[in-house]
Length: 145
Image 1 (cartoon, one colour):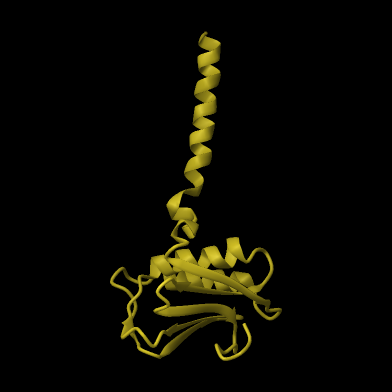
Image 2 (tube, rainbow, N blue to C red; image 1 turned 60 degrees about the horizontal axis):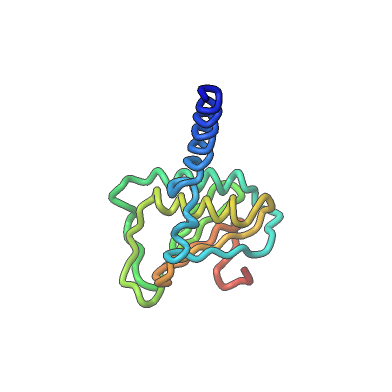
């Protein structure tokens, strides 16, 4: 009986460890009703490492959020071969975003959803108040995604 309980205990620990690694912090796909992701064309001039670094820098923005982006305007950030462009929708007056949440949803789309290739990544909330593109430098939202 003790042997059986010891095995059961080990299995429960292994299962608990496995289940805790996904969770809401590591995988924002639980927010699929809040966000929409899309993978675009492969960008040969973009290095995924540069995009990860740029998202990390944007994710370390202070908790009070970024400087507001006004209605219809866009803002770009660059890191070597990568560019992040955010455009505020015409139905929104401005955008104030938390860096850590943007990192979470952008990084998940770039790494988990769009896979190991250098595909362009797009993310937007369900209310379409803004759209973000993670692409190679010099790409414009007016061009084919």
